[in-house]
Length: 337
Image: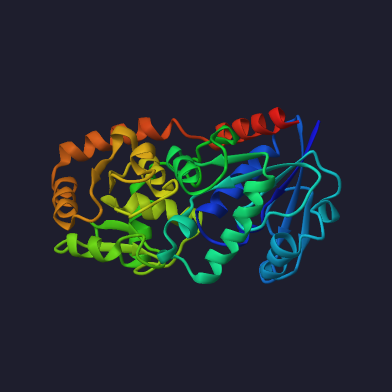
């Protein structure tokens, strides 16, 4: 039996890292060879998940960041007890006598500092120095992220393994009646393009808005609030297409979420997006507004193309599952122990 500590503090927040952490933790808890213990720290959001053996602390994240990344005088065993493996989040790297595993979703603060706040850059650089010196194994969520790590850090390639993520939840095509009810609730048009909101320039929303002129464009987090998983599934089901022409993504969960809901995808030909979309998406240069406009027009007006993309999307999304993610992660633990 391998005793594994996993930092699940990221589940207090919204976003891809939270989705990854929550789904991985849930699936790892089902593996009989692992004794899982979870570290959760949030000042404002109490833990309300269904995991067992969660050690909960009501302290500000900045305190743990200083404690684990800067002062480094208290080990994670103080909070979780003896461990064989400690799997850290992307925010802190606590001292530990156990073997150390961490997941890198992207290297945005290092590779694209212009998209990050100076304080976030400082935290990630400080943590990276510890990772480079101490880490036993790094999980990268895509080949793109692995290549970025090799390019921007001193982590040896032999210490990095790609383990893919999966759709945010068990999304599927929903009945038309539920979709129509959802549209009415949020006053959505019958035929619209969905884009994913975000802070800063990375999601490329200014170019997407220009390219989508003449069509109804709905941006999650702006035109419609951030939704829970049940309503998020209905949002994807309501859309005619997803336009996800981001400038950079470590993985790109919305691509798989759209595939699972039978929604065609126009996305970027950079970073991880072609890797995740395979042959099931339409790819464009995210800096080329005319190219984005052309492919929006195609997917919005060509029913044959739309049908073809939907069928390919259903096949592509089956290649990804959280059970597989957990099995491959547990394999990393086993090799280290």
